[in-house]
Length: 538
Image 1 (spheres, rainbow, N blue to C red):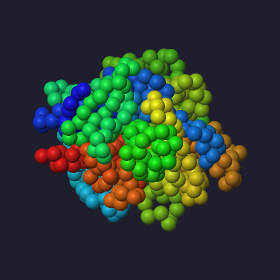
Image 2 (cartoon, rainbow, N blue to C red):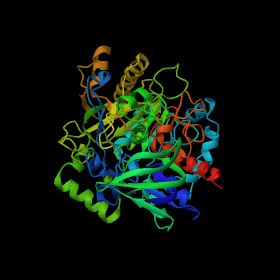
Image 3 (cartoon, rainbow, N blue to C red):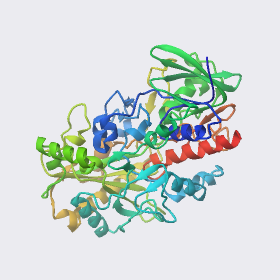
Image 4 (cartoon, rainbow, N blue to C red):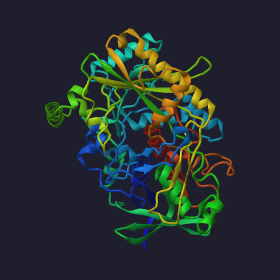
């Protein structure tokens, strides 16, 4: 039996922050359980290396959804980080906070303390932004944010110009006063290396004597005495080990693993648990429900000008960019594939942007088996304009299949299951074509490769985006926050309703999804959650 003040389950975007802050004073003993292994891998640290980790079971859970009727029956691939840093160690590194209205909506729903003005000081404290400091941006924080405006591929500037020709403003900072417009994405890297939550928070914390990080440790059950969480049972090398928490158990497993662990431990939908022979500790139908995710699609073009295809595909190009990266930590390998992008409204009735754009100065129509073909692009000069929805109304679920913690849960996204989501995506793909038709882009395009010029009518466009869309890896809300115990899983202080000694601090608590990439908001949640825990344990 191992005894600690706090047990943190998961070392991902939120868990790394929680571990650092709970251990900082030296007053508390902290155990961190991570189901995966080390983040000290070349393709994890090299920013564009996430093309290699996309299917790698050594660092990736490699979840697969149920066949989804809304996605033409496709079973979507869901990569989630299974290593120190979690998904912040294998993601595309785009640093987006979300819109003011997202967080103000959380607060308006009764989640006191979660409005934008409450959270802005935390976002600023997190950041060390290369673009400088102002009323929106922070400097000196643990997460280094790189300003790539001077480093992007020349074709990215054409995309920005075409976006402006299509009616969007140039936006120099999507985390500034307003999100709408086109611009260059800031990414969380430092000196050409991925700057994950593990590197920013967990690695410094691991130097302290009062924290213990155990890798390859799969949490299988929360231990309860009555309705109080008192510890965790976990598997390591086939052996079951028990650890006790004198103060709190903090779940930071993310939107898949957190509801899975709760359900395995008897916290979740009563009928599901009873049917699987799991004793019910606390019935709550919302554990694993209310799944929200962003769906995206790329429109791909063949161009007249060289793209990154001509650099990254040939052996000599790979050698040159490899040397550039190894010697100088610069070049394409030091960046995300999403160099530019933006946010727009699909119609005038929208009060704020409801769609996100991504520009990629290369194309991957011909995939290499078993690899996301970022490092093996097409043999012609190609590029893609992608988009994803910001606040879809479709809802899915994540539920366990058995009592065995090694069995992956059943993931049902229910993509495009509402008419609203279909209508806004139809309008959005038409706007992508509008951008491509603007002079700055059309003069360098020879043809649309995907979906192709024959795909024109509304029914054809809808059929195409159902067939080709997929997750952009932002699942949230499976243990959503709310003041009403009958409608949520945790309260605004992230305590699990109906239970003691148990909190959830990760993206699963988001009451609703945010408008954009979710990693920055997940790290913010870790920071705020840790502050609340420390307030309750003076």
